[in-house]
Length: 142
Image (cartoon, rainbow, N blue to C red; front, side):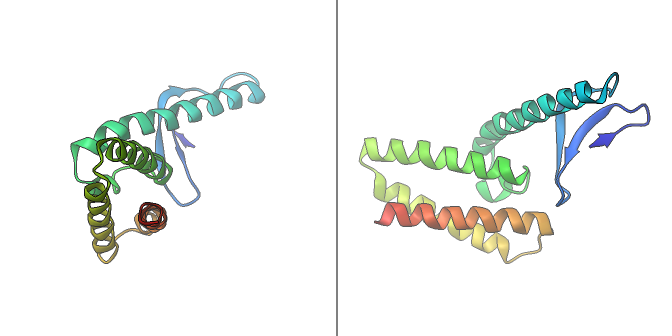
């Protein structure tokens, strides 16, 4: 957790060094079992907010840039959400081949990105996303 000098809690951090800002800040006051419960509630709310914000941001920029702006689990959740939504739309519209080509292009963009200079966290996020994208590609080709 990130604490300010006055003990206000403002963010959570993963073991890998990834930071997720809290959707609301809090002070650890009263019995520890009470405020830790509040921390857990805010953690869940913050993860949810990260996903909501990222769903909007996904459409605002290229995917290769978008993946570097969000926490790993947000990227994986939103990436799968859009894959499912776009896949369903493509099937209904009879445009699965065109959508498949878009997926291949996105996978190529991620592959190019992974060849560049990345932080350890970005490389881990991209590795996980590429594995999911490859499996998703295989689902469509079968």
